[in-house]
Length: 338
Ligand code: 13P
Image (cartoon, rainbow, N blue to C red; front, side, top):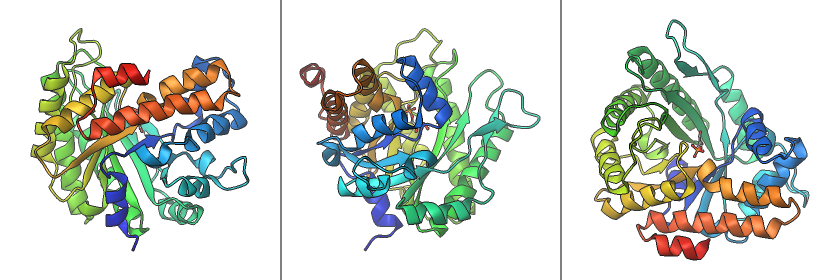
């Protein structure tokens, strides 16, 4: 029987991960314009439908996070998008936050909005076929950030969101993203991520969220993008695993990382290293946006009618990440797939 525990387990099943195809129209416009394709409703659907109908999607992808526009679109065969995904053995999910707004009185910090009317929107998304949801909070690192206010208010919103979603019989993906930008080192990223996760779980527990029915989507522990330091996969894996072990309760079935601006291969290599040393019961998988779609998008931009080539590239990327969930990926396999 389908319930939030079985859905959460299916989302993080070994060998599979989640495709984050929930870019808002603004973000999608940036992605498409970067490859000189106009961001029309038809083009957004065409690229996404090409990925969703990839021949191997059912082998490597457990779920897809959709955007409001996409879940209401009709595929070229006349099915709605959630039906199409179900037919391909993929669980449909939906981004339900309404994006970032400035956090009042906290310069340069953001809080995520979208709680007003959320239960009503969830009723509609459930009818359309969604069985899980996503809400993303972000935190930036600097000498003075994130503030206590940002850590508390975002954790509170994430927990209220998760409670409302479980009340609607869906699985919330809880995404507290500590951004990569900054000149900080990996230790600072560890400390900030630890405080952020700690407060998130405090709030989730206060709000009575059933931890067996969520999927956590955190960042990996990395050096800041402008630090000039290279990330070593072994160190990333050790620090990420340690941070999760110390700050995430055992009831959480699985952790699906975001890629956050890592290259496709970095994101795969780091996930692989984490799984190689995983001595916990947590399932560690991927919920990547850019790190699953970048090469596919570049291929599509070369010839938007050549669906087969796009699907081959997407399937190969998904397969590399699938191998990484077993700790069985390596550079030779990567070269062969390319
Ligand atoms: P990236 O993997 O591109 O960071 O996107 C994941 C995501 O869902 C961000 O909210």
